[in-house]
Image 1: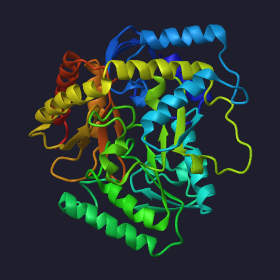
Image 2 (image 1 turned 135 degrees about the horizontal axis):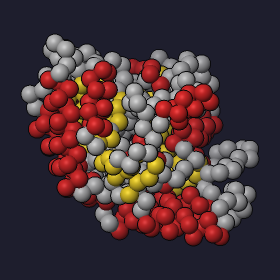
Image 3 (image 1 turned 90 degrees about the vertical axis):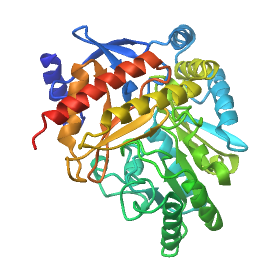
Image 4 (image 1 turned 120 degrees about the horizontal axis):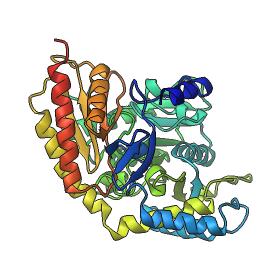
Length: 432
């Protein structure tokens, strides 16, 4: 492993982050488990950053990919592509967006980049509203609308970005307010902001902020925003890269918790739909999708082998009601984690919905982030046979828990016990 680590450092960028002081090589997986190069098995509560949505080595997806590879792997968007049309039909139908068109990309970053292109072209404005603490990818334009300093390596951007309050419920100037008061204050802030600028092209927002530590506003905030935006002709882009496909349990899309004023104008997706294959995309009303006045293609977006995987994965997800499983098992898991965290001075909050759960850590007795504690808990969980993620922004540190949606009750109990032990053991040994 040290040899592979040395080789990694010799040829890959210094900024390509790795988890753990002794990085892990994952060689194979099955169900909700993965194995490392030494043969040790781990319960996977992060799923390749929320990409392995249903299960590792899911037989239906493996079969679909193998069969498609035996026919043709790729032909580009310059030719008719039956699997791409079939998956687009399915996604357009379930998106909730009327007269929907679907464009496939290879990642969530590229999906958001495309949505920004469409919005700015349609509205003839390069001003974008985004949420503080947000993350939308690593392309030049996506970085330009990312409200998270830890993932924004440059302030240069083709866009003028203005950041809005509301993505984080329990921090910031409105944290002390009730939910209704919080929404009202954020709406007034948005109205005030719109009074100081030319009309923006769009608001891009994650219903639950992923890299930001699985934070979210009260239900209905983006519906209230949409009412204001609609008055100004401003589009709403829902970044569903992490929240889509039933992960939150209560809804199939994260925007549906804010659906009182209708669906978003655009929806971006990626990660889980491919179950590890590279699929991203944009769903938009036809008038927005068709607004470009020059040719545009996607060489690898919608390629046959990834579309076959997406179709098989979506079929499995729906037929086995994994959204319902996320609601039921996720509810149990968050109860266990809240019970485990009760009384621990370094745990500020256990939050989440479905199988998208965050544990925010702070220095005991303060409201300050404790990244060292987050690293220690991650290592202790790994030692116990559990893999989790981390995140947080603006002086926060959070553990991110997002298992495959097929997680069983027994696996949820096992993972919660390992994580409870990791939290207690690192708190007990932390310096005073």
